[in-house]
Every structure is written in C-alpha cells, then in structure tokens.
Amino acid sequence: MILRKKIRYGAFALFFIGLAMIYAIFDPALTNIFPSCPFRSLTGFLCPGCGSQRALHHLLNLQIQTAYSYNPLLIISLPYVMAGAFLDRSPVSSKKLKNLRQFLIGKNAILVILFIITSFWILRNL
Image 1 (cartoon, rainbow, N blue to C red):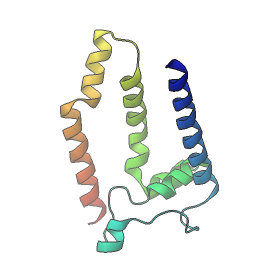
Image 2 (cartoon, one colour):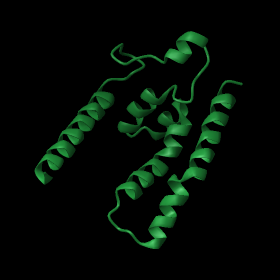
Image 3 (cartoon, rainbow, N blue to C red):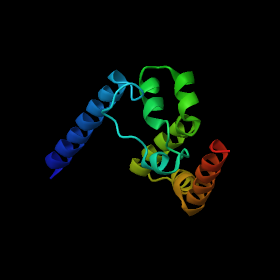
C-alpha cells in the first residue's frame, strides 16, 4: 500500500517536472502546442488566467518582471498557493497550525479569493 502511494507520487512528480520542462523550453507566445484561451477567443476579453502560460514560461526562465507583466495575479498568488499546499499536507496537527490552515484555506478565505479574482478580471478589461 505504501509502495503504491510512493509510485503514484513519483509518477505525479515526473509528470509535473516534464510539464515544467516543456513550459521552460517552449515559449507559448511563439509556439502553437499550447491551447489558447476559449473565453478570449469567444469574447475578445481577457479572463483571470490569460497570460498564465507565458508568465509560467518566463517564471521558469527566472524572468520574474516579464512574468509579472503577463499575469500579475498568478505571480502574486504563488506564495499563497504554496503555503496552502504545504498546510493541506502537513502532518503537524498543532492548534496554531490548524488555525492558520483555517484562515488561509477556510470558507472565508475562499470568498476573499473569489472577490480578488473577480476584481482582477474586471479591472484588467477596463
């Protein structure tokens, strides 16, 4: 059972490393192997995720300022996402850690995140 779990995590890690290598090597602005945004194709407006592929490419090539120019919300949210992933999988079960987990990924946090994403979506199209 434990071996299967390790194999599954290893396969996941290899998949994401391979995907990161593809994004690091190929610039989504210059190649056609990456999908385009269906929302932008249909409406002509930017969605909250528009520019994320190009931002990821530049971030993986350590061009943080260029990555930020493509999608600032993605770059700003990365520390939050990494903290949430760590807290969600943390084996430590102290009361302070549970409170922090609730604060960062609880019901109220979801509503705040929804407000931030919606505001970003509207403001980038004005």
